[in-house]
Image (cartoon, rainbow, N blue to C red; front, side, top):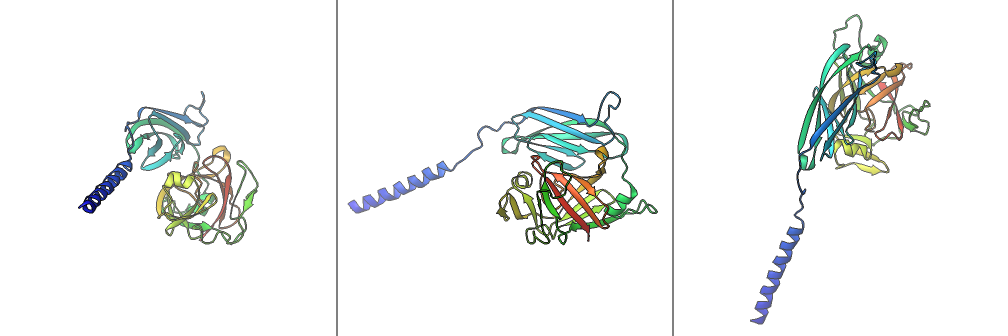
Length: 305
């Protein structure tokens, strides 16, 4: 009889331990507070007393703050620009003086959001030259309304097709340049970058991409399948996507501006602007972009497939 009582005590004790363990794992977010007091500021690049709508580059630097917010995003014509800091530059390239509506969304704990909308009057005066648009997406001035596109890829057969250097540097891959096919198998060489005359940018990833940690995780989500190699994430699982692109020339520097998460070759976050450093080589572009925390400039050579 005593053995039977002890056995029952053991069973009850085990159940109590299991219940306590379940209670310990019952995590919560705490108080869920909706972000409030959203403040948006829009700074038109080059604006002054004589140019109240900007310098014609079409660039506007937005800043948003809110109480109880953990992240932000800006939404403009369906494109989303996610930013933890609340700072984001957006290029408006429609020629002339136009009014644009931009919505800032502040996210709090457990995904609760608040939003506020702002309108900005922006002047854009830059029209890209025909030789640039012809090279980038096959524009034909004899048939200007035709829909055209071109597909690009990283030129892995050329030394220095990928690399880095100091921010603002003018020497390509000054600190590091990849050798021929050096980055094979990391999720970059099988990517295709398609620019279309209607302003669409399509990135065919073949299921995975290559990027910089933590920027790729911060912007695209947790790494579920990729291999971590130092500050790189190789073969980060990510599907095909489409964004938009615009051509501008701030300070006379021709630049490809990609919306949303759009990137070329290696994900670095940042403003998703790619300076066209050199386009003199047939069927080739030399590009550079600055990463999210302004530590490096990243260089890429792309070629027409």
